[in-house]
Length: 348
Image (cartoon, rainbow, N blue to C red; front, top):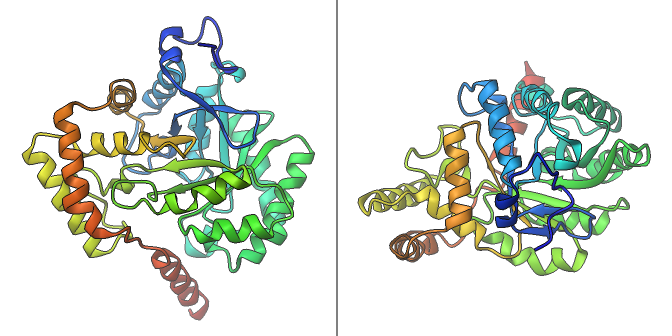
């Protein structure tokens, strides 16, 4: 098999690179690994992390053939990009594609989102500085459902990103979010060429709604990036954090499924990763970790899949717990909560 253009002799483990599958991301010139690394964990978003271990995770992931990295200013409010930038210093630029985002920034509700053209262009410069790079491969609008209206994304944010592209600061433009119909709306109305979409928790065991959009996205030649195959913690034995926006029904069904897996001595997260990797349409499935142990676990699933026993449990879980959920989701929940906070802040 031929090696990807991101292969660097002397840096990569050639045998592991040969075990990784690479596919063209939409109509871009990038051939990305089917498994990609989200770096939100580098920003200590889920727990306190050791930056040295994050650096090591990055190095091992890249040497193992992963070539697509996703980040954002929002993750750790600049920390994830900074930690990623430090780690990239010792890595050949040819060895990876890096994607980051604009639009979502600080924890306070009134400072969280800004999709204006001016802030967007400034954000690209800040990201380049934190990452220590001369250009970003994919710049994405972060969680566009939080904009006052999608008109802002179409008329301000995307044209500002096009300017950055014209200046050579970014190579491709993408959009991200949780509600799926927004992708169609923006793709139909944007005068700026959109190369990729990234969504999360919509191509997972508990919700496969993204499938309905594959024919449309394929027809548009858009790269499809699938984030959070474990449903932001729903498909884990530990369960989701308190802030998770899923409804009680979704939480309970996923918890029942996790308990059932535990009784069978099977790790539900492993099944969730395998399930996502088996979906042929997303060009890449993304996981985030700052732990070498977890990185290894995810790579093992990619390389070795699941046993016959584990597959049987996966099929039972889908039949008994996931199918009855009928792709239930939490679209609108977080957005409503956000605007309530904004209202409260303007009233006080």
